[in-house]
Length: 270
Image (cartoon, rainbow, N blue to C red; front, top):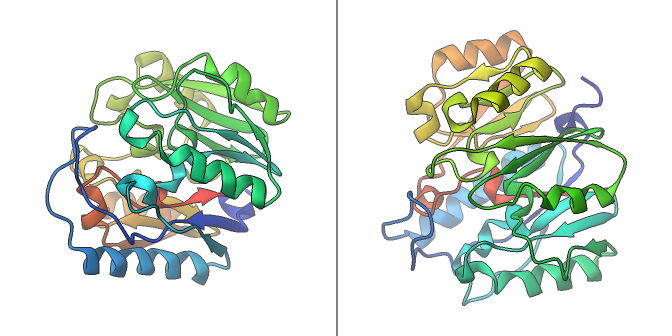
């Protein structure tokens, strides 16, 4: 437990939603008019909840022409002082890459992947459950073979997870590590082989319902003994988390869900 990623988290990066709108559609959830004032309120609530758990929040200003830049989770994958940079699958987001690269270099990170052409969407598809284990989603947004390069970041095991279907297009929409034995997850989002591997390695994982999956409950952040989640956690899931010693902190993410994102999408673990 002490080496679980949520216990070790010290800093995250967030991008305030100064220019957040839904102006195009690149996933099945996108649509609707964003209430910008409400989006800021929700973003600030998430920021405060993270800070309340003792995590430092750094910020990067959003470019006016890049509405999805708020979803900074997709900027890359950080391991210690290194980062493997994203290569977005859709042209609408490729402009974000130069802003992230500039920030990483200015903040002392050694960068990888700048010239590698294979698609990779950072923390949206790759997450550490502990320093030695990387869960590596592949399918719609990240390639399977890119992780051969991502492994340059350090000495850790890569567990490849095949995503199926289009609604759960990133790993962080259907999988959230809780501790060294469990994750919140939505089994139908994965291939049968991947389902078996998750249960083999994380035998106490908590499967969410269809309704919870659609409410983006798996797009949660575990910090210390708190699970920060969008609204919609069932009593059954709450009880299962409580049995493992975790409290649930629900945060309204309705404005960001109009673009297919929620809690985890809005942070990059540093």
